Amino acid sequence: MLSLEASLMARKVLYALVLILIVLASVGYEFYVIEQQSVKIRVQTVLIENQRIAIGEMNATIIELRSENAKLVITVKQKEEAIREFKDQLSELQIQVYDLTRALENSSNWPDLDTLKTFLARDQTDTNRYVKGSYECEEFALDLQKAAYKKGYFLSVQYVTVGLLEQYGWEYQAPRAMTHVCNLAFAIKENAFYIVEPQTDEIAFLSYAD
Image 1 (cartoon, rainbow, N blue to C red):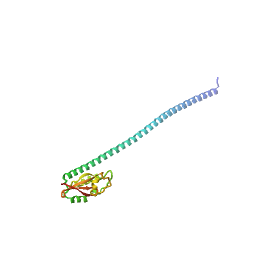
Image 2 (cartoon, rainbow, N blue to C red):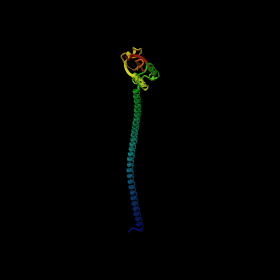
Image 3 (cartoon, helix red, strand yellow):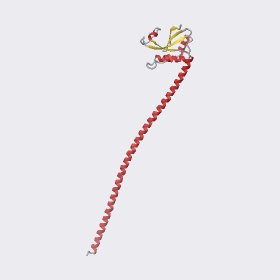
Image 4 (tube, rainbow, N blue to C red):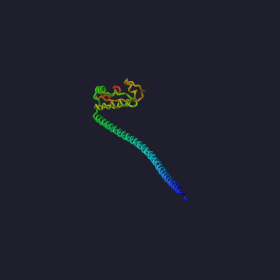
């Protein structure tokens, strides 16, 4: 039989082994819990990263949509502005057409040559700037015609050759066969037709009516 001292020692050893087993089990469980928490943290990290990427993509989409919306707003504003300008120009043209129509209805031939000369002296069409390709002889003649209409007189627009006009002493830097645009007036007192050069206000006798 074991002595009392040996029995006590055996019990202490047994208690120590049991305590060690408890501690080991506790530590193992703690490691298990930590590992599980670590797995959860890694999963959450992946989810957070995916959400961050998704948010980034959403922000990029929002920026793109804002940009497209801004372009659409600008386009709409440009169209509205163009429509307003067109309407303003149309209204202005309608007024001009109305004024010219009234003037044409009330226009008549020139009572005499002096009246024609006075009109040309006061009119400013000849001071307009000649612009090749956009404001040339035709525009001068048409503007002078409009100005005459507004005063109640009639001026026609005529296409003639440079050679014909040079017969009246007018000089042009163009071939004689080239077409030029001028105006034609009829003076009642003189019973005659006169050619008018709208760029210089020069007048030349063309012919009598009879």
